[in-house]
Structures are given as C-alpha cells and as structure tokens.
Length: 159
Image (tube, rainbow, N blue to C red; front, side, top):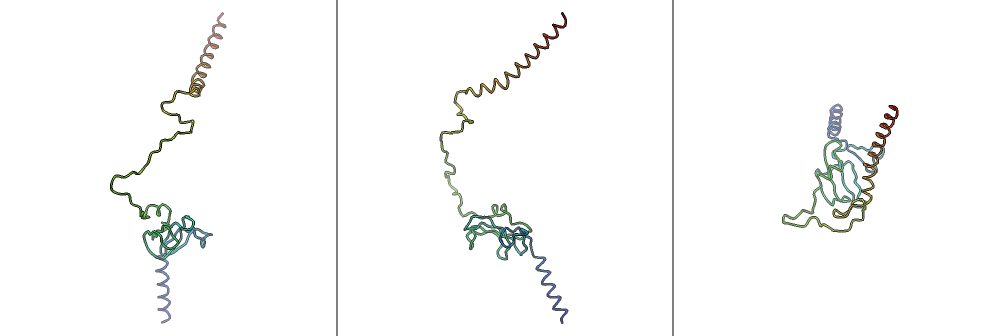
C-alpha cells in the first residue's frame, strides 16, 4: 500500500517535470538566473511602463490584448520561446487596414536643413570643386613632377 502511494507520487512528479518548459525570465522573482520553468512561457508588454516582461505562467496559449496588467500578452509552450520577436509576430492587431483605397503615407515637402544633401537642381558648390582638385589634381601633379625630376636626372647624367 505504501509502495503504491510512493509510485503514484513519483509518477505525478515525473509528468510535471516532463511537461515543464524552460523560459526566459525578466520578471523580478528570477533575477539571479534569467530563466524559469513552468507549463507555458509568457511574454508581454506591461500597461504601466510599456516594458517587455518575459516570465513563466500556467494559463492560456496564444496572444491576447488588455489582459489584467498586460497591454499585449502571448503564451507559448516551447522551450525559450518567449522572445520579443515571438510577441511581435503573433500579437493580434486591433486596427485593421481598410480594404478600400486609403491614404497610408502623407508626404511632407519641407526644406532640408542638412547641407550634405543638396537639392538636385542646385548649382555645384565650390566645396565639390575643391575636393575634385585635391583628390585628382594633386596626385596627378605630384606624379608629373616625379616624372620630370627623374627624366631631368637621367639626362643630366648623360652629359
């Protein structure tokens, strides 16, 4: 009789260990190791701070919005599956894009104050000309001067 109760207890423990899943954990109760074990992994965004929390749980599979203290909450049952990428790809968005033609982007024409990107029809600046002279003209002049010095030296030794 006592042996059968021990066997039943071991069977219950072994099934809970087998069904336990290792999860990432950024919640306050798992600071030392960063992992926890439970039946499912949770990843969500808190309403109060908009921070992403990864922890262990026991309820629900899938993703939901506005559940308790969570803005978005997703649950999964695979090892180390509670990543922000999982939350982002599986969270259901309430705002659907209408099927008809709608304005998605609104182009704003404004003056660009960045001097490194001139207007396409703007005249060439002196800065561009100076860079061309420095990067092309100076090396060509140095090369030509070298050729002249070598040629002069060669012909002087012939005399």
